[in-house]
Image (cartoon, rainbow, N blue to C red; front, side):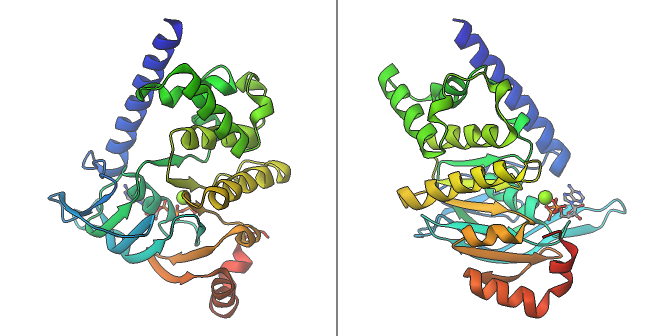
Length: 285
Ligand SMILES: Nc1ncnc2c1ncn2[C@@H]1O[C@H](COP(=O)(O)OP(=O)(O)OP(=O)(O)O)[C@@H](O)[C@H]1O
Ligand SMILES: [Mg+2]
């Protein structure tokens, strides 16, 4: 009973946060996108089937907000890229270029103004601050929390929780109180929660910002191993840390709302060295 009340409270809390977030981000105009289908974001929210082998596919996607003077402020401009299943892709670019906005659109938290997109379901958005996503008292309870919406036996729940914790290297911490974990360990618990729900796309926004070097490595290792072991999960990882590129299968480089380059890691590094020296100098690596 206590568990049920906690679950209800948390769900209510998250819905409240999400509603507040949506209204702040897009004047209340955002709506959740269906995965497995693609919407043409022309404001009317039309939905059509969009068969694709990609885990994430974005075509000619734009996003604008109303400016204070009553005009239109473009944030994302004609963005196109795809991420195959079983791959970890990085999303790079200077502050304010639109990385988080793009991720929020993929998560269904914002609605595009134009263009089409596909994100395989289920998907999960993991936030930057580790304290914003783990709220249950223990590791095991937190990973099991999201499974309440499925019709699973206790054994099935236990099995999913163990496998997910193992995938992120946190199985030995399953009984630990959440407040005793480091930031990186909390991030890994949040990722385990997504994996336990059989998440197919992980959307990860600057997870390593608040973490020390040891925790940064732990989180990115966990994501890389989830993605490459199952070959089913895809991850899109926003970062400023170019050294994290060595874990990636591909990358996307943005500036001022546009994708300037996307492709395999050597081609991105080559592009950055030749054309974006100022970006490389501007980040502390
Ligand atoms: N609702 C909004 N209203 C007005 N401007 C917005 C809105 N949402 C985002 N922006 C602007 O869009 C741009 C892109 O923001 P976004 O947060 O996506 O950038 P980012 O690449 O994630 O930056 P950072 O690296 O600092 O996290 C910024 O200039 C931001 O101020
Ligand atoms: Mg951001």
